[in-house]
Length: 58
Image (cartoon, helix red, strand yellow):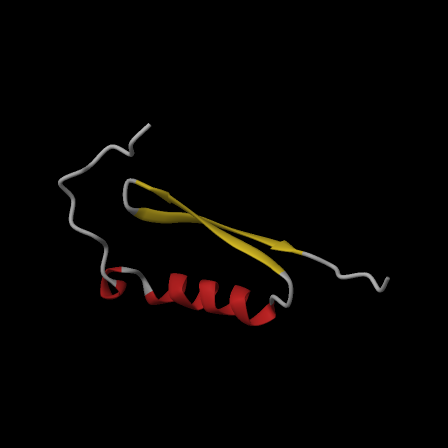
Protein backbone atom coordinates (compact mmCIF):
# COMPACT_ATOMS: atom_id res chain seq x y z
CA UNK A 1 0.00 0.00 0.00
CA UNK A 2 1.55 3.37 -0.97
CA UNK A 3 2.19 6.03 1.64
CA UNK A 4 -0.25 8.94 1.43
CA UNK A 5 1.29 12.08 0.02
CA UNK A 6 0.92 15.44 1.75
CA UNK A 7 1.32 18.97 0.50
CA UNK A 8 3.48 19.79 3.53
CA UNK A 9 7.13 20.63 2.77
CA UNK A 10 9.82 18.54 4.51
CA UNK A 11 10.90 19.68 7.97
CA UNK A 12 14.25 21.46 7.98
CA UNK A 13 16.72 20.95 10.80
CA UNK A 14 16.40 24.63 11.70
CA UNK A 15 12.67 24.05 12.34
CA UNK A 16 13.36 21.58 15.18
CA UNK A 17 13.82 22.81 18.73
CA UNK A 18 17.54 22.67 19.71
CA UNK A 19 16.58 20.96 22.99
CA UNK A 20 15.10 18.07 20.98
CA UNK A 21 18.28 17.83 18.88
CA UNK A 22 20.24 17.65 22.14
CA UNK A 23 18.04 14.78 23.37
CA UNK A 24 18.64 12.87 20.14
CA UNK A 25 22.38 13.54 20.30
CA UNK A 26 22.56 12.43 23.95
CA UNK A 27 20.70 9.20 23.14
CA UNK A 28 23.09 8.49 20.25
CA UNK A 29 26.19 9.22 22.31
CA UNK A 30 25.14 6.78 25.09
CA UNK A 31 24.11 3.95 22.77
CA UNK A 32 26.65 1.20 21.97
CA UNK A 33 24.35 -1.46 20.49
CA UNK A 34 20.68 -0.94 19.79
CA UNK A 35 18.27 1.40 18.09
CA UNK A 36 16.62 4.78 18.45
CA UNK A 37 13.07 5.32 17.20
CA UNK A 38 11.62 8.79 16.72
CA UNK A 39 7.84 9.21 16.83
CA UNK A 40 6.39 12.14 14.90
CA UNK A 41 2.78 13.38 15.03
CA UNK A 42 1.60 16.10 12.66
CA UNK A 43 5.21 16.90 11.75
CA UNK A 44 6.30 17.32 15.40
CA UNK A 45 8.72 15.08 17.29
CA UNK A 46 6.76 13.76 20.26
CA UNK A 47 8.71 10.73 21.50
CA UNK A 48 12.18 9.17 21.49
CA UNK A 49 12.47 5.43 22.22
CA UNK A 50 15.91 3.97 22.90
CA UNK A 51 16.39 0.20 22.83
CA UNK A 52 19.75 -0.91 24.24
CA UNK A 53 21.07 -4.34 23.30
CA UNK A 54 23.52 -6.25 25.47
CA UNK A 55 26.01 -8.42 23.62
CA UNK A 56 26.84 -11.61 25.53
CA UNK A 57 30.08 -13.51 24.94
CA UNK A 58 29.67 -16.86 23.16
